[in-house]
Image 1 (cartoon, rainbow over the protein chains, first blue to last red):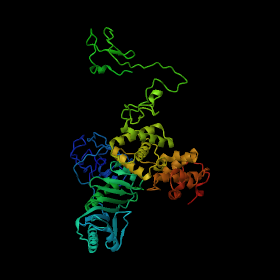
Image 2 (tube, rainbow over the protein chains, first blue to last red):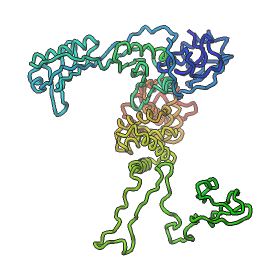
Image 3 (cartoon, helix red, strand yellow):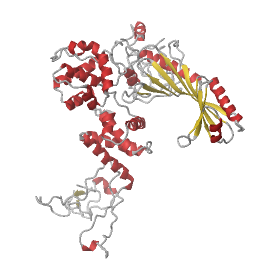
Image 4 (cartoon, helix red, strand yellow):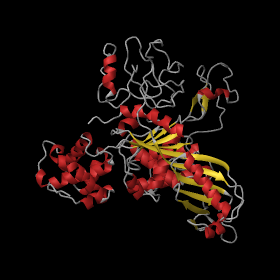
Length: 285
Length: 318
């Protein structure tokens, strides 16, 4: 656990092992703080983890780190003078990935919704489907697809006349596949030569709770590149993580919604990336 | 005003003094001559006279300034207004046999910027409605020009882009207007303005500061007719409420409205939630919700030197 410098997520100037010479330019490949595309914790904000750092940096620090500032500053170690003062608005540089030096959170995001598509491989007559199937609605003036629902797993499907189908509402990949198969079976029983081609999960949504309130104003200041927080438009902060490509909705209460994943691992990875950052912006009162 | 500078000697056909071929000719802009500095010989070879075409005298009756040829250029914003316009003729010769004017087509001036000029007009109209100063209008025009030239938001309605640019310009100048205020002067919905706002920030790769409760206090309070004391008290209350984290997750506008309500109710100028809601663009239930959150700590929130017309314990409790 060596986070000597407070730094913005994508640039750092001193390695914890002192392996870099002072004044090394920003674009060095020896960045220990992970890829510029993955968020990194900013450690100079008032947070509980600061107390840990203060122990380690007692002798080294020139400037006190615990001050209520929400701006990013680079604190200097004697001998490692940063050449550049970094601002949150400088473009990020992709750097070789390395693991952040904190232990993993004990929290696992739960999947809430899976959207998948499948091609039934034949043209369908929506009118007959709507008339003969149970739990189907079809209003061609409003939308050009049959909306069918099944109870187990509780899902909804949009079935188009081209034979393509969208299945939403499942809570796991297996359930989504099973549900899509059930819909295909229904269509097959109605007399169409339905197949099950190219089943693909298009989107996965997960949610979890970090169990502490979060200072969104601080987060948007330091992670300006990725965050959008407009209380007039939406009460949550919209964090667009680049790697993995996930959008997170972060709320003051500590609840986090993750969406845009194609595989389960992306959700978990994104949450593991954001958790240390959120810890850094925990509300202390 | 010199068109040909000394440095343009290379572009000209080589004019030089016959006695001093190396000397750089000095120009006399008034008469349009080029004079050799060594011997004073006038090597006047110029056809163009940059002086004015006629002498003008200030004439109180004439409203036009006869020395002006055309409108003032808007060089920052247009792509250089170098196009020819044919105006409506005067006199008998400009009409053909049927009485229609010849050369009736005076359109197509800078067709590429037609949409941009339209947008500028729209921006000025919108800004006029809420009395925005010239600097914000200029900033908005610049933002619009940047967005328009980038073409990344080409599909969106120009009015939506213009409204969003106006919103961003107000924010950047440190005097933010709420989305609802911009909606009030624009035909575009808040949703669309919000979408365009986010897209423009991404396209121009800028960001804006977060809004705070204090940004709106002076405007809301003056619109309600509240005295300065009440305004200052409301500012203090709102700031304290945010510092003490009594209103987590609430929009700063709602908190500001609740603070104004509390301050006005404690003073002689009491305003109802409905009135404040009308001015701030906030529903009165929202004010009620935020007020309920700050009410328990009301005694701590008021500034120390505040003169209470209604004491803290008599404040309305909804």
